Length: 199
Image (cartoon, rainbow, N blue to C red; front, side, top):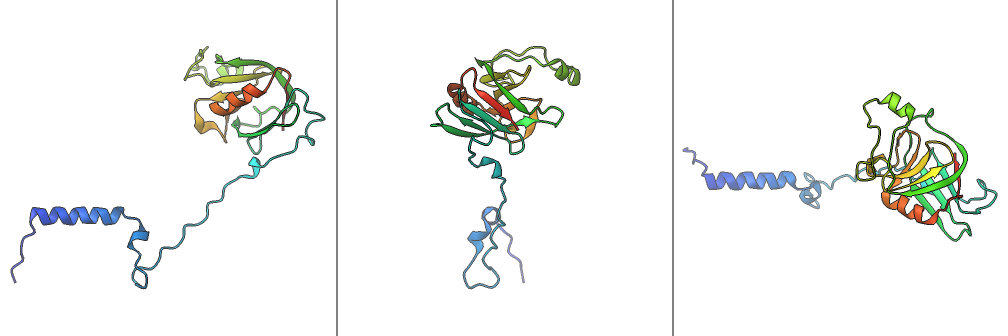
């Protein structure tokens, strides 16, 4: 028997068909009633940690909400905000400090608000990372993002970040970070004197 050579056209068609079948999801290859092509098994459910993103009441944490109140839960990596009259409640995912040594807990307050903050590393940050610049002006390279709420604790802030990968992680050198759109909203609602509690 003489084998017929495969033409270029046929070879291209075969290769194209093979590529399509490889790229097709398994569901497309399922044929009802065909034991050789059974239905695909469902993908296992993905477990997500949503415990930190449940609404909380302010009463266990504050005696009142005068000037508004911010609760930062460093374990669930969530920031809660209540307005002075409690008509507004907001919940935001946050970044938290890299280590326990860098994490400060307790009561403080907002003492200053800055839109377009500049940034300079603290002495301890500069000691850990001598290659860091001494100063970064406002802009896309600034680690404080678009807005910053300065706390009464020296060097501690609640601020935005241009690096969205940091949110929801242990990624800061002590501060609490939010998505830029979230810090902009929080910035608009808070005032100097807003209570802050980190737990």
